[in-house]
Image 1 (cartoon, helix red, strand yellow):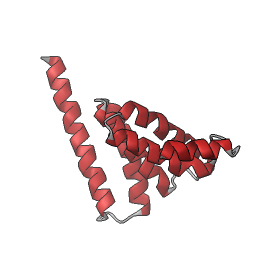
Image 2 (cartoon, one colour; image 1 turned 90 degrees about the vertical axis):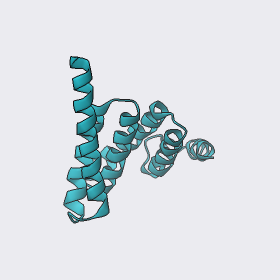
Image 3 (cartoon, helix red, strand yellow; image 1 turned 180 degrees about the vertical axis):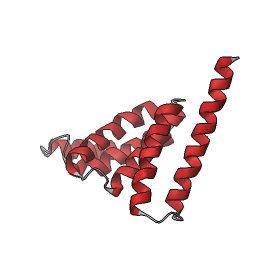
Image 4 (cartoon, rainbow, N blue to C red; image 1 turned 180 degrees about the horizontal axis):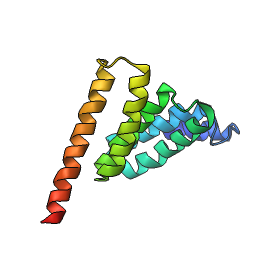
Length: 128
């Protein structure tokens, strides 16, 4: 369904980096993620990020969503340090735009702690 939407938008001669495609790319990424294909999800999340970088101010709240989604896809691939980097970026933006007790901020902190734990456990296993 989202693939059809993307083809229609691109057929309408909208450039592949047009801001109106962010939602479509993000939806495609979420579909791949839900299907257990984080590598494909990353491809579309990177397109989403590229468009946002070129069309939004650097600390815009929408970046937090994309950084969070990138962290999830990277986590699913076992790329914990990269996921942690993006999750910290999401947290930095969320804490600027939301209150410290906002559920999104709390979830950011939980995910950061989980990633740090996973990195520590992975480091211990490789040291053995």
